[in-house]
Image (cartoon, rainbow, N blue to C red):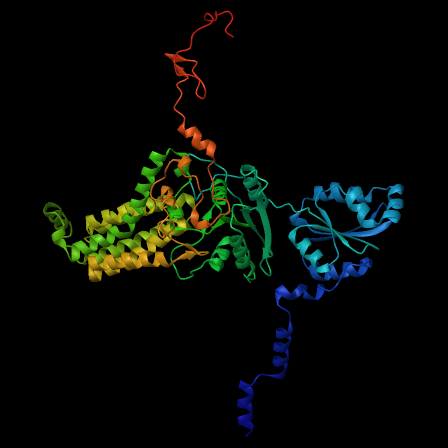
Length: 572
C-alpha cells in the first residue's frame, strides 16, 4: 500500500507546484498591465504619481526621472526615455524655460493656474497638451514623449519630444523606374505623410490615425480624399482595421492578411507600394491608402488584377509606347505561367504538333536523358526557385555572384551530365525571365507558384490538363473580390470606358472619368478645358512661313511686318 501511494505521488502534482501555477495564471497578461491604472487620475500628490510611474517604467535603464523646481518654487518631475528623445531639445525647450527664475511668473501661476501658464507662456514647444489619466501618461512616455508632473497640478503635461533616427529618403529598391520620381517611403510615418502632402496639396486630403497592437501600440494611418473616395469604403476599411486584435503589429503585411476578402487565394487582393506618386494616383482615383509606422510600404485598397501589371512609367511615357510595353509585359506573364506546361504536354502527349525539323532537334537534344519531360522541367523549376530564394537571402555582394554561378555552372553541368536536355534549360530560362516582367512582387510569387500545379496537370493529362488549369485559374479570378469590387474589373463586369486603361493605355485626356467600380461620388477626373484643348488645331507658331500666328482667335496666315528687323545693336 505504501509503495502504491509513492507511485501515485510521482504522477500527482505537488501542492507547492499547484500554488505556483495558480500564481502564474493569476498574473495579468502583458497588454493588461495598464488596466489597473485606467481609473487613476493625475492629482496634485506628486510623490504618489511619481511612485506609480516609477513602479511601471523604472525597471528600464534608459528611463529618466528628473526632479527640478519651476522658477525655484514649485516641485516638478520630468519623465522620458533617453534613447527616444534628443537631450538638447529637452534641455533648451523644456527644462531651461521651466527652471528660469521669474517672480512675475509665480504671481501669474497663482492667479491664472499652473497648466495654462506653462503651456501658453513658458514652454518653447508646439506639441504640448494636458492629460488627466495616468495610463495615458504612461503610454505617451512609451511613445517617446516627455511628461511633466507638478506638485499641486491635477494634470500632466505631455510634450512631443520624440526623435528617432531614420534613413534618408531614397529611391525604392523594389519598384525601379527609368522615368519617374526618385523619392520613396521610409520607416517614419511622419516623413511618409509629408511626402504625400508635398505632392497632394489639397484641403480635401484626409488623415485618420488608428492604434493597433496590444503591446506595440503601432500607429496606423488611413489616407483618402474626401469627396472622391466612397464614404462606405472608408468606413469598411476602418472597421476591418479596428477589428484586428494582435499583440504586435510590425508591418502592413499583417494588416493585409487580416483585411483581405479571400484568405486562401494565392492572388493578392491588396496592392503594396513604396512610391509616393503611385499611392497618390490611387487616392485620386478614389482608393484608400494605409500607412503603418515602422514600415516603408503602403497598402492600397481595393485592388483589382489590372493594377498588378501596371507601372508608373505607363503614364509618364507616351500612350503608344506605354501600350506596347504593357502588352509585352502581359505576354511575358502568360508566357512564364504556361510555357513550361505547354512544352511538357506537347513533348509527352502530342509531339505531332511540333514542326518536323524542330521535332528532330528536340528528339536529338533529349537523346540519352533518363527522365521524362515532366521530371526534367519540375526539377529545373524547383532548382531555379531555390537559386532565386538563396540570392535574395544572401548578402548583396555574394547574391549576385551566386545567381550567375548557379545559372551557368549548374545548368551547363546538368546538360553535360545528361541529367536534363539543353532545350529544357532554354525553356526554364525563358519562363524565368518572363516572370521578372511582373512589376508587383506579391503577384509574381502567385504566378511562380501556380506553375507547379499546372505543370503536374500537363504531365498527367497533356493539353487537356493545361486547359483545365487555365479554366480553374480564370474561374477563381472571377470569384475573387476586394472590398466588394470584382477582381477582374473593368473586364468583368464589362466597363467599356475602363478598357481604356486595361490591356492598353489610352491617351490621358480620353480617360475623363474615374473607375466606375470604385463608385466615387465625383466621377469626373479630366476637366472640360482639357477636352477643348485637344480639339484645337496645332499651332505652328515658329513656322518660318507662318510667323506670329494666333492659336485661339487669330488666323494661320503669314503676319505682315509693320517694322523692320531689329538691329544687332538693339536685339530687344
